[in-house]
Length: 505
Image (cartoon, rainbow, N blue to C red; front, side):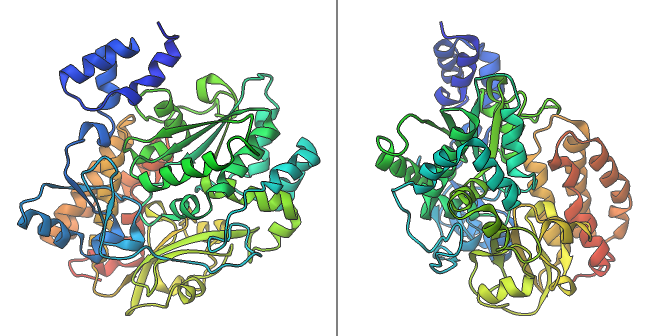
């Protein structure tokens, strides 16, 4: 019999569907009670809805580009289709996933653009990977304090959305007495408008692998886990191929483990990710303790986003001050995703703090007359185009009640109803709430229902309790999803009141 923890961690690896026979087989293989197997597996859409057919994205960018017509076209041909939350292909909108195990992307649009080759960019998506792993060699020469000092000097903040200083997080793990420590890469990218980590993995996988190795070397660990969303089959394969190229060379001695997500946006929250890794429903933990204290298997754990880790090799090689100086208003360069009504959707590495106009200029310009934009994924809500010169950074966006978040920028033209845009984001949050806490579980449903009633009737009375509801969700939710889930609606009402007064805008 496996140790109890190992039993639990195998659950999501061995259960393939929710049929009674499959659940009991998985229970026998793992030693976990059948009810617990069913409870965990039913949480994840790639397991619970394994026979969904074609999965048509209903994220905001795809909705703007005609996902409803795409869905209807499958139905007209007699093909089974199901709506899915954002599938991370916003630059190829409207997009879908095939029903095959490979979840191949279905789109008539080619993948979006990236910044051209520029060796002065830390991640340089247009460049080529090196198999030399010179940054790992230099990290060993610098020693632990040298690496941490470089990170501190760089000002690198977590690029997954929270913006926590990377050096401080690594130091926190080092300060713990436990010698068993883990490094976890959060590659569960699923925020509407966001697809930057996908491109890092596909184009520069060795940057990620090297950043992870430097982190493990620094905190005194050899165990590295990569949690990658299950819809990203091509990136998963590319990363495994890259690892095979160097596993017996520069990365000898490190143990890389791949864990595929099973379809749950909430697992992008770091503690929900840990719960999924340990074979349970992906529900956020109460903090403290923080993962740096009690993380994977109850041990000190560094959890960093793909982009954060991909910045590390250049910081080690060229120095923290160099990286810091690349920013415009805040330290470093930043990968900005942009989709919606622009000429060339894609991922562009620019100085942190560029404006929307500067980003759009690189992305082929506006197509039409822009009226609004979402600056940092669904969690950031909406801003009017009058804020187009505001720096897209952590501090400046917080000044207007928004956030940089995942830097998933979506531009919206006149002609697309802002109430429809808010409804799209509200549906996403309702679908992706884990259901653990009442403010989020009930609140996300009520927000979406209120918007649906408004769109059906154009009667503002449908939205009369939204401010109170949003306050309760922000104050009472366990994690960030519930805290910001009403923001798309409240920000849209604030900046575009005409769209919620019986008309459209």
